[in-house]
Image 1 (cartoon, rainbow, N blue to C red):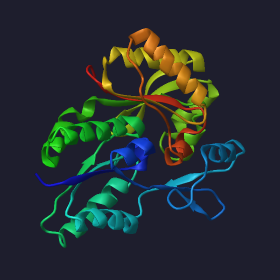
Image 2: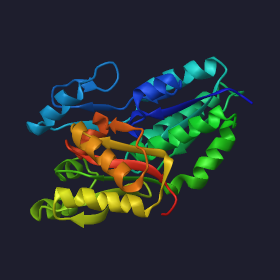
Image 3: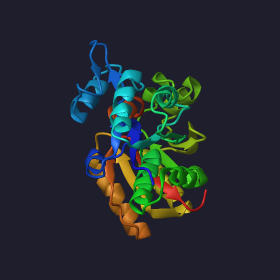
Image 4: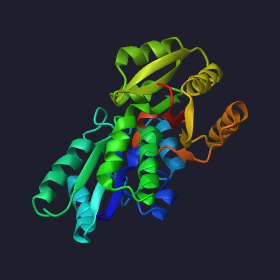
Length: 285
């Protein structure tokens, strides 16, 4: 079996410490305000600084993977005789999947003895990140890369990402939700449960209050019969709320929550502060 490296992009919210421990390479994506500084790779902001700027009214825009940086990180593995299995953020929300495919095709013209597999997760945050965890578990079991791709593709639609946000304006401004839908939600103070459907952000349910939305999020989660092996709570800024939600999940389902992960700023630019979500593999979809 050829040795291979698992790679992903930052928008799958794989926890950096886990990635480092398991030798998973994370491709950067980028974000910027109006200060002319591109953040996300060599230059970063703390979560506190990032969300403080959002709350003060600064507009943040996200940017996809840099082809030159992708090529650099890919070539490092290929030159060391390793194939690549890369799981990417939804192609419906970013051009990064296409960028990685293009770079892969170019590199395979040079490294003809190597293989590069690129999976379009059609998902986001931990909904995609849990695919990476599955891929790594299978790799440790000795499953070869092509077979891992096959197995993930077979269950891909069962990976779920559901979340609530405090203010829809960030999703509207970033083009991730229609202006009409955002305006209605803001006007009526609706707190929708959002989810990924075929790679796009859609409304699953509508709640009148944040408290009710969190309850409805938990109910939607339970209805889908989650697989306890692949499950993470994600959040922006409010870690305390995420930990309270994790305890509630454990109390009501008996499922232990091993991963509570902050959402990275390239997604946080669209969710805004105080987003709360869950990514998992569902038995029932």
